[in-house]
Length: 101
Image (tube, rainbow, N blue to C red):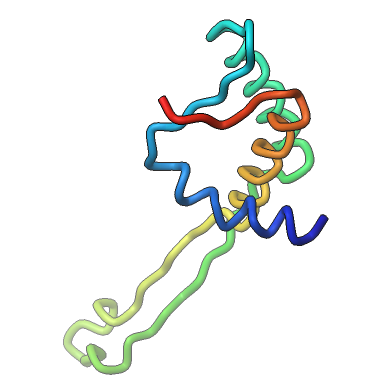
């Protein structure tokens, strides 16, 4: 199970920019939207948004004239990939397939 989840997580960046969509025989676009919304809701319940800040100090660009130029603050949702993997898994469990357009 961990291998499958790991593979799904690795594949998510590849599907984000491609022309793939969810398909199921006999299903309408409305059905697709409803299924995806249901899976997304469940994913947010299981993996809520959890923002994490990271502060990086670039010592090479540090100067006493402008010390803030060397300070970089990033903020990331550390549960984003888990939610995306959950949605993918949920859609597959509901009988949907990710196909080329």
